[in-house]
Each structure stands twice: as structure tokens, then as C-alpha cells.
Image 1 (cartoon, rainbow, N blue to C red):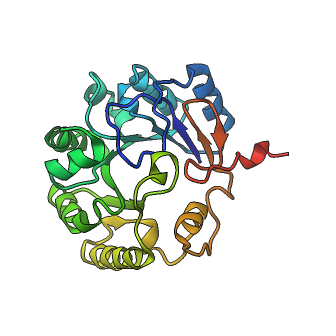
Image 2: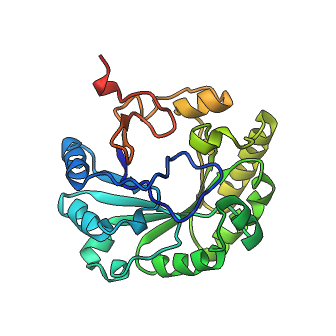
Length: 258
């Protein structure tokens, strides 16, 4: 599994962001080398910063698909690059777009992201959904914990799957108030009930019988009972070119350890 954050440029400043938003860009040759190195991986996860602001994004999507990869793009949904919706159907069917939406109202959205793009994002989600496999992701902490049911309902109204994650103490995530153990259990219960009622349209590390995440174990004390992708050779590459086993578990990539 390879996750590449191609840019440190973003048009938002989410108060829990794990990334160093310094405007840097990962060189194209490095990006291609990383993907070629991971020959056994069937997919490439592309993020940022905001990858849709990177002028190479369409070329990279087409290149990755040409290399036989499925492409997963993590975006804030504020920008749809010119030409994205007009990609060849053979390319589109190999692309999944994950749009972050951490609030159900413009006011809360602005307090989290620092921008007034809520309505634009909802409109863009509709446009993306018409062309690509699309899902929504929400990151939960104290500020939006009470809005979680509304976010679930909004995702249902849009007819899209929702993935829910917890904030990790990486980057700005160190400075926000995370959920208490009691709140995590409350969130788990809500998500499990909604998952049953919505026929699998809800997903989260919290709803699975086994927790396989090093980062959750370190940050929230959730016992790890299965193998983490980190243990199985996951590779994360930051815009700076640094390599880690995981963007949230910042130990150096195991294959580079002496």
C-alpha cells in the first residue's frame, strides 16, 4: 500500500491538520519512482495538502492508471480542476475520490477549516459523484463531536458512503482537544448502529471487530489485535520526500531501518 502526499500546498487550514503546509511539491520523478518501486500494490493513494491544486494532478491520474493502478484521491472538495470531469471513461472507472467534510453547517465548517467553502463543497460533491466513485470522510474531535449525527444524515441525503476517523496527535492535531475514552465508546456505538441501519454505508476503524492500527493504540489506547498496514509494508511519502510507514505513526519506513 502506497500513500503519496504530492503537495504541501492547501487552500484551507484545518485546525487538526497533520501535514506541514509549506507549499512544497514532491518532484515528479520521485513520485513515479515510488509507484514503480511498489510493483505489488494495486492502488495509489494521492493526497496533500490539496492535490487538486497541483497542476500535475490530471497527468498523474492518467499515468498511474496507465501503470495498471487504481487511484484514490483524498481532497477537500473545494476545487475541481479543469478537465477532471472529462477524463476518459477507462480512466474514471479506476479513480475513487474521497472528499473531507467535517461539519454539517457552514458555520461549523468555517470554524474547522477557516474557509467559507461549505456550499461549494456540497455542489462539487454532486458533480464528482456523477463521474467517479465518491465517498465522504470526517475527522472527529471535540469541536465536531456533537455534530456527528448530522454529518451522518447529510451523507445519507447525498447517497454517499461515510468514513469516520479520529484526530491523531500529529502536526496541528497535537493542539486540538481529542475525544475522551467515554466519547470514543459513544461514537463507536453510534457508528455501529448507523452502519447496521444504513447497510454498510458507514465505515470507521471503530466499527470493526479487530483494531489493527498502531496510531489508534498510541493516541487513544485502543488495543491492537490485528496486523497494521504499517507491519505489512505500507509506505507513506510526505511532500518533503520523507518516507514513513504511516502518516499518523511517524516511525521511519521499516524497510529503511538498519
